[in-house]
Image (cartoon, rainbow, N blue to C red; front, side, top):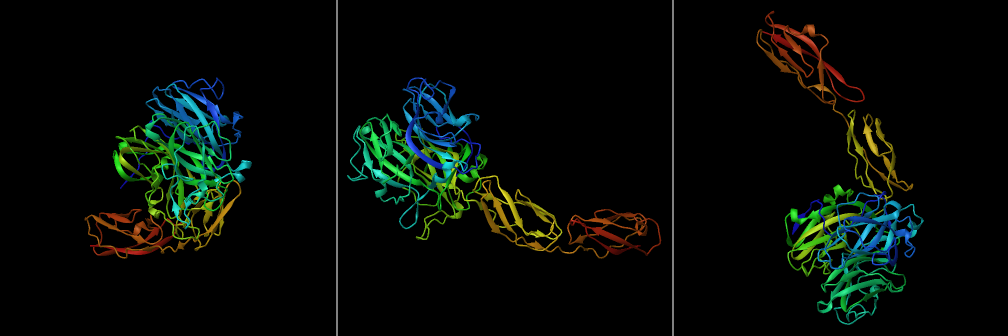
Length: 615
């Protein structure tokens, strides 16, 4: 087992969750469709042809397509992006918010020109549009399954949060298989899908313990073509709705293909329908669901995309398990500290670069059991990508009183694991995260101070809610101030207090916590040196007077330098030096020295008489 992290940028296929103006604003999900937004194979138009031109970008203003009823207040989209290079080489294709600088990332690649699809969560840009760039000529299809809105949107109160799965005993479940038509005949098993014949799956009747209030699923859909025959496309949709003219994945070469999908339940029993244009087996796995806001729900936060792992430059190809520190590697992406609630889900794009065929590659929270379902497959050895909403667990209490929770240790917070059944390199790219949107103060304790000593400026911290935050609190020790920005500073001259501190977000929602701010006494200023050595006429002399207590640095001075032995002087650092001049042998010279410290708000001073005898 290895632990790796690195932040680099390369052009290989991966998902982009682009930064939007409210990057630290919690976003909630509104499922729709599925609905086809654009297809460049159609007649020329805003959402039709022509094909994408090599080396150029094109904008798609999704809300302007009336067919999908997406409002112009959406802040991110859940898309399925499909390229149809028609057998021609496609280096990479990138999707990002219009008006932003084109990022050095890509959503997918098709080196052999095959039709490929990848799930994508993309932030909205200028005029709620997204931009698409292709290195080479290709057709493009965009399907949408939902969008995210912010707190100012009227739909926010009925929009959905993201939840992990739990078994019937309340134990965390990283992923669960819903459907496998390779199994014995049954409602969620065989037989395989017949070409052109849709099939309904009552997924909530299975053993994955999906709650009845689930309104959307986080799925991984896998097509296993029969006998290696091509599967032109597979469509998944809520059974309560009519079959849409959309697709989730394509397997034109007959190899096993997986793709993530965020899909509405359609209400009712929450059944899911699947259609395949060709005979195939199908697997459907679930790793979470969306429901109305409640205990343990997570909101989406978008980030500027960045690379958190590339094993080509940090250890090379691997077989078996590696643990990836997404949290620390994601700091350059703007990733904030790990949630104090002990659970987050990272929006990752995993790209494998196998040495040969790769048949099993799961991604799951470090510290929890290795799951059976796989996130992606590359049986043909091709560079392959898929989106993963990968949970990470720390000190997570998710049992809701039902029993012991399988979870990572606190040291596992911010880590996700991956397992390769055969040698492969791996790229993880981070584009966002799901975290608890509840406003909380994350500061756990206030640093102690010392009386009459400047208090190092300390910044309070909080998570959740809708930044920016404002702070207030009282009572603080006399001499300390607490700014609206959450900074404690000043010079304490009063004793310990127990301030109650409140943070308020931009919506007016408060969170309050009490602290103890201990002020320790300052040791009184005093001389450490009590006597000075004698001097000798015409011999160099050096001695240093020292002090303790109070607050360093100290300054030493004398009000009667004329009482010093001739030839000697006192420096500000307390050193007496020089060469005693001719004089009466055995004469004692008495003089006063004052030491002044650096206390605040006013310095302290003490004086003492010293004697030097000149022999």
